[in-house]
Image (cartoon, rainbow, N blue to C red):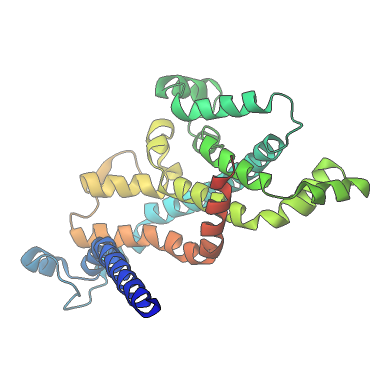
Length: 289
């Protein structure tokens, strides 16, 4: 019986690995296509279409990308937005989630319920636009960071993680004379690296991929983020010059795919360093009620 059970388990594991392998292949194929086209001559792409690997390496698409000043400027804007926005969001999320994890907080259930309510019912796009405009945030970095500084779902996940930390640690620190700020930054946060890495990745990817708010609030082209410029290239085959007018950028799939690769590389490079915290933080933060 034991031998048959082991054999059955091996077969099930083999089927699971096969299925996961097929799903991974399906996921990777589009990205492989983007990379292949970005390194292929435009004439070859037009003539033969997609190939698994380029028959000839052509870097003209990447050369044109790096020669375009707007790409570099939007790249810098996106990096600044991602770093500043993620730092602010993580700080505010921790400051909001930690008190909600305490049983002695007055009206804790009501406060949590109001936060959850905003996950399903928002104020709407037009009121948000009017608010940003009245606050004088249009065409500033604040318009891209402040409206979405805290995600309700992320705050609840962080709160659930903090609830798993033993209260005895805080009680011991209070006996030694520690206050709330000291406990949070010297005890709780060092123990919360998994959830901090998880929410940092969520906020960072969200800021890096955002373009719609740029279209709504930004009017100066020197302040555009990379994803909005990328959208202009992919949707219209155009990009802004240093003037007011819009001119032809590149009408080539090679150029478009090279821009896609350049915009994707930073996230791919960061993810492996956070992966070991990601699963642990997500699981622990989502099971506590």
